[in-house]
Image 1 (tube, rainbow, N blue to C red):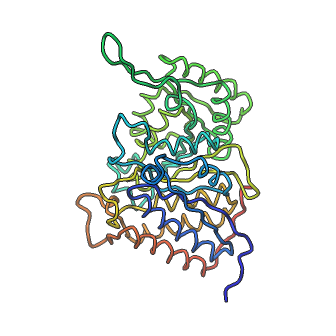
Image 2: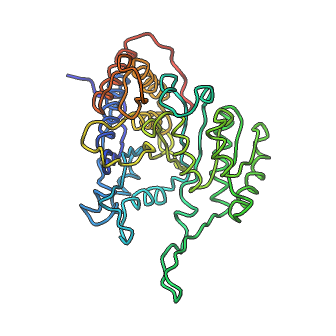
Image 3: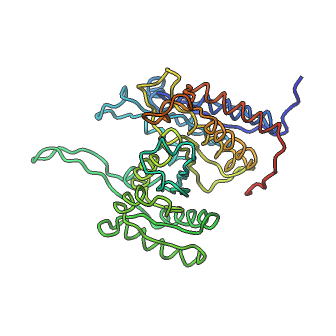
Length: 387
């Protein structure tokens, strides 16, 4: 008979659509295996949301499911959306589940770390020399801006149809995400790049003013301003020059997807959406890979689960306060890649098949779990939790 875990965490799981259920199942297995080694348990609550929620309930997410997510210590999400629900005239869309969770739970900052594993350098379209030393963090404002502004609608006029979206930011919304970015930069290489379009947009000019006001509180952090178009160019020309980037909602969405080419695939990148709320274990948050639902490969056991598994590592670190466990999961992922295991999105054109082992979603999760067990059995230094 097994012993009772010293601590049981509550995690809300949202499989979503497309490959979401597959990659989420892989990450759940890794978290459960990690708990078995570190002596904690997980009580999972599964929530139906996204396109699946529309099919089941007629809503992308129900209010009672948002409250169930709020009651958890953290949320782990697969992906939502797909062509089945892509009617531009539809009043209900899968992405509304994300907006309801982010806005309803006040998860205002999205953290997207971008590093390049040496074994995946051939998977990136950039020259290897450009990838040396790449270690950046994109901090994206998540609950305001163009995605949340009102009015946002299509109108009929005497001159034909027009559409309007409203770009809106308050000083307080900007300040809280900028302040978090400064704090994160202080714990890294102390360099912050604020990305805006201040030469055109009033919201960006306010953004820049707030950054300048906040820099006085963080005099040990080097601050630079970059227009979003030039930043997009520099991300592929000089990516190693960046440490922490902070930007508004739309710009952050685009730039973080662009940055995925550095890592070799969208399937590799994790994310954490955080607010100010703290539980007894850590900072409450929602964790998900940055990739979409990829319905064309759903159900075929070929999706890359590593972005979701690495999101689970961020969950361990930020929401559960388990730095040692997070590092062990990240190390197990790195070892699987070092050993030549690849899902198909990570296999570069013309790669030597003799040096790589093509695996599916389930087998990649198996490989990470196997390496977790090996690392657990080996002597290891103990790292302090960031608290």
